Image (cartoon, rainbow, N blue to C red; front, side, top):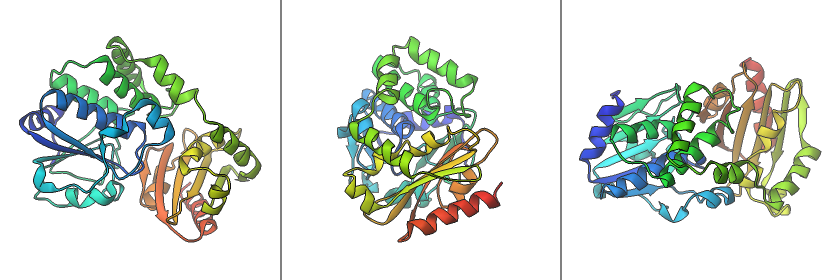
Length: 320
């Protein structure tokens, strides 16, 4: 059932034991929206746990506290309310998807993707906002919670990341309004921007060499893939390759880009980007993922990374 943000606020205020979830391989908006909610609810003396099976990337550890995250299974009997943030599909909840597929559980879904197929008992979606962190910000204001500079910084991290420092096509007037409000609340813009956009590990720089030497172009599509054997030879992690598709989309006359990184479990982690006017969200959705029109992702199981490459190329051609 679709709810207003005021109704969602009432449900959260009423609950005492709350579990929070977000999508697999969480990005900064997923973590910004879930962790900011965690901190303010703890201040309200509620029992709150944030669940995720994934470890933080090196960059995420520079800004956020991973010790908050519970990597275990969730015992539904220990909670009365279950909240999902920034997760458009049931599949993207990973091991916790069964909690939201059970209609008997008291679930809330909060998101900013307008392609939402994940439904909670209570759902709020606002696709006018460029990040889910902005929705949580509005929720906290409705709840009349005093937002500390610490929480404002976490919320700004989600906003700045999902807009890629306000240059992605999902950036709009709300993005700047919320950024201004968070800055007035004391969000540490300099620290966040420095760590998000001006800090690279030596390994990430080394991997850029690999990208520049191995990317391929087909018509207006630029792409690169890294199989697990190569990743091990480079002594790298998949998170070190997270910026490949973003780099490739900046090439002149390129309208689509994608990167595929294979992990040791045989999963192909796919990142898709596009220029304004070109849609990669449909591609991601057809692969079981999701995201935004110009920035989406998916993860599929395959033992043949070149097959996945050709599949994505065909999907792009068929969805023009």
